[in-house]
Image 1 (tube, helix red, strand yellow):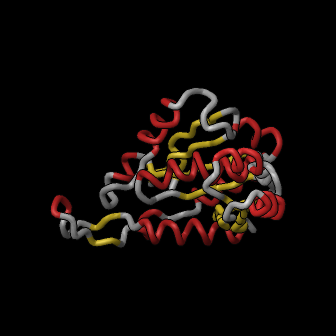
Image 2 (cartoon, rainbow, N blue to C red):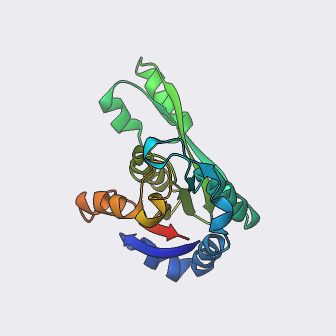
Image 3 (cartoon, helix red, strand yellow):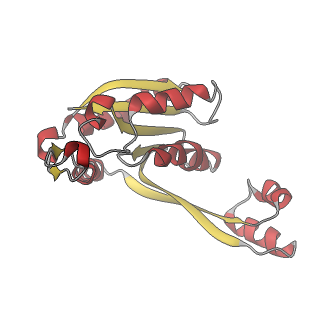
Length: 203
């Protein structure tokens, strides 16, 4: 695989190059270390591509996971408590999980446990590899990366996506770089309020 394009939102790429250049090198080496042809294993059952051999998201994910784990990137979770009261959420948003729970319960509301999980985090850089449906990318960018940034666990979020040229050789409904770049830019220069790097890959 190779990096075809990348987009830096709120100077995410520049931050990594200045403060964590070795991590950018690792991300590049993991992507370039994947043999794309070994991932072309899925036999399509869709009408428009029936019998055609496609790139398998599952196989590409496994190879990405193996590459990041070998470089000691680890899964991280951030836990928090939610409730139905909007004012209470605003009041407790920036507290620790334990303080959130206490404040909510003391206000006589039900405290509901929740969490966000990111697959690969190392030295305050988070990476999500997304070969899934369109909605998952928005969740990564506007919920996962933002939650970890607001929780002071990361400085930059990185999203790895297939280019359209790769996505067209996958099952239907998979998100792709060009489309998600459009969606991100359409939100405006400061939204979401977390430095990001969008990476588009192809064989």
